[in-house]
Length: 229
Image 1 (tube, rainbow, N blue to C red):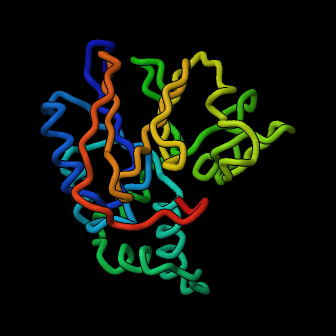
Image 2: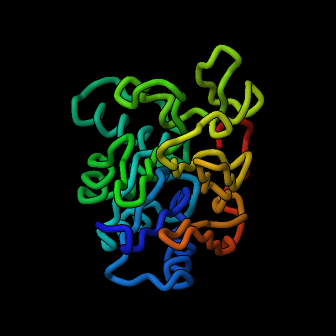
Image 3: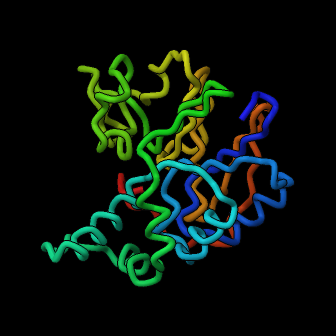
């Protein structure tokens, strides 16, 4: 990949495959483009299998989100005959509809991904500044929203400051997860979770043109509940 190659970063899809396909039409997706998902392909929306199947069709890259991790943990327990963690209905639907190829795709997603040609780092939720990437807690990578006064991560919006305001590069971070705050555009961080599954929008960030493109959700698929966004 070179600086001239176009990369389409896509916010939290949450099974909203119709909106994802519409977004690809609006941005004029071409086979030469590279699509990168910021996590949470599954759960809450209407068609998690369809979303993952479409991601596989696009040969898309991406990182895993907290909802992807939740169903992967359940799948792992199933396969190991271990005690099964409790699931909410939105996750039961995912577990009951994904096929083997979908599971393999999700399981191959890393917790973070670098796109060196554009000096971009992709994570689902965020990172703690001044902590080497390899030393970041995986839970923080998929759940954090804020930095507390002591510099540690919090999943809560009102428990400190938005972590991205404290990130000063040198890499630009593209992330999702924070539908509470919605789209975020900081000097060195772009937050793409615009709440599609809550009836709002699905958003892409295009490089090298540095452009944001959104499509509206077809309807409200689920209602937000506190910090469980």
